[in-house]
Image (cartoon, rainbow, N blue to C red; front, side, top):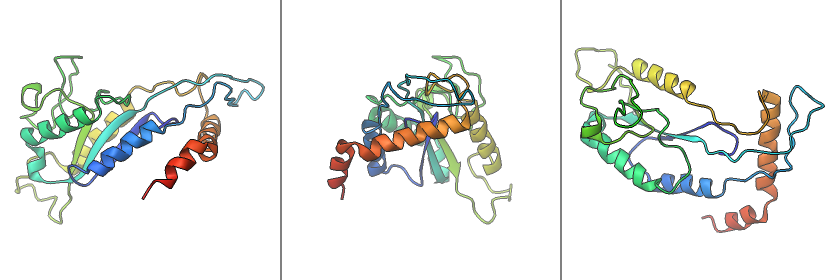
Length: 205
């Protein structure tokens, strides 16, 4: 979580409470890199002595969804549960990766995944997206699916993830891939050597 812009949490059903708790625990244990962190980029001679405390965007992705999962009532239930589960979290759940427009807050003008989706029926949107299960007859357009085609939804998902705002992970301008890898190594070393993480691991089942 300390080295990414978007955290995509994928589930095959609603809702796995152990998975939600796992995300909450991972956020609690997220390493805070020391201010003495040094990252070398293409400017090998430059030294940067401060890191930025950042919190990634959290996208809750439901895979293999059925027809009933796409009803406004089901979407409302899902969003309400996640909103309550992460109400004290610093993970960003309102980043615009929505299935319908949130005109009450930020005026996002995006097409709704389904016509029945709106703030009144589904509540204020969060970063929740549903992908349907693919059947052998998925290309048969005569069968009512209750949602757009998988390819259309996948394209929309890709567009949203790539278009989300990127927060600053470090104070290094134009962080290169090499610099990012060194930053990841620093985060992993912090986790591996921290006695708190070792002690916590002992209590895991």
